[in-house]
Length: 143
Image (tube, rainbow, N blue to C red):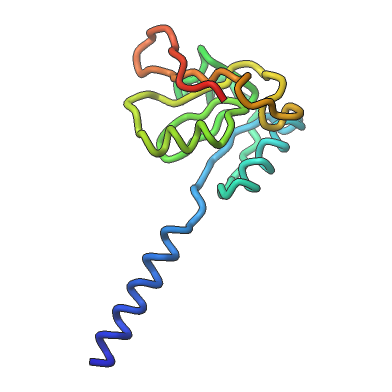
C-alpha cells in the first residue's frame, strides 16, 4: 500500500509542477531595439519564459509567421500563435484560453501606452486578430 501512496504523491507533484510551468515564448527582435528589451522584461515579469532571438531581417520573420500586414517591431511565437508587437498579457492569455482559428494577434506599429512603450493606459489599446486568409484584420480586444 505504501508503494501506491508514493506513486500517487509523485504523480500529483509532477502534475502540479506542469500546471505552474511558465508559458514558453520565442521572441524575434532587432538587436538595437530598446523597447523590445522592455517588452521581454514585461513578459518575464508576468510569468512567461522568453527566449529572445536577435534578428537582422525582421521582414523575413514577419512573412514567415504571417504578420507582415500588421507589423510592429518584434514578433513572438507563443503556443503556435504569432503575437506581433507590444500586446498586453491580458490579450495573450485570452488568445491562449480561447484558441481561435487565427494566425495570431497584433498591436501594430509601436503604440504609446502599451507594454514596453511607456505607462500603460488600460482601455486605450486596440489588439487585432490576424486571420489565416488575407481578409481585413478584425478587433480581437481593447486592452
